[in-house]
Image 1 (cartoon, rainbow, N blue to C red):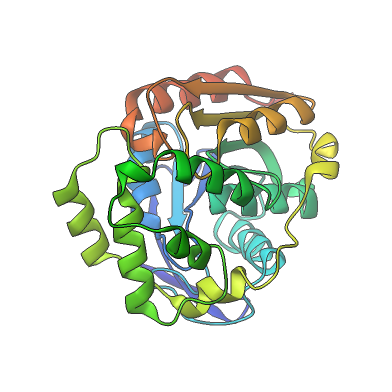
Image 2: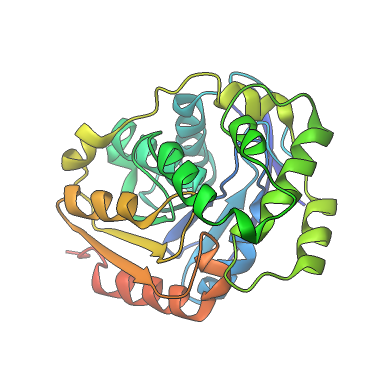
Length: 283
């Protein structure tokens, strides 16, 4: 698999599609937990008309454990990908969950780099964590091996090591899907790269908040969420869609945080339609 060294870190990435096509850069979620594979698989079908790049973010997946782990640095890494792998052309940025937070950070930090913005199951501030506790307590029966203390650790810098993070992640998995497959969850958790170091650094401070800057995002924006999303409840997607001037919202019934997996056909079709309707003029 290809690698590239940018901003002092060595990134592992996947790249498919015509090099001359408009570029979609897909950002995975999970602070030190997620990796590129889920986003790449979910959106790979778009490579018939677009070039799709998905990479393991700094300190995540198979990319090097290279501090600093800050929202600003992660956004600057997106810009480095744009400059070095996309020839400095404007990109379509697609971010899910934590990746959506980085996409929003990029949109306010590097607005000149965007042509369009697509967000999935995310939030414009750290306050989704407060709402997630409420939802968690309402749905605790769905995850009998999980506890409130585990969720407190997930939203903190107090995870002891990679193994504890992996066990917490497995216990919480039933909350992420409306149609939960425990065998798939086991295999997914077994094969994931998890990094408590990155996780703890990114949760050390509750300072992420771009709500007041949403009004300044000028590019066409598609906001997607599952109606049953527990960790980034739909009210956060609605707020983003309300505050960004040229935004639209797709709320998918019967889907949870992993809406791009649970309702893949619906999400991919919506992304195709949105990109076709918002194609920049060539004049």
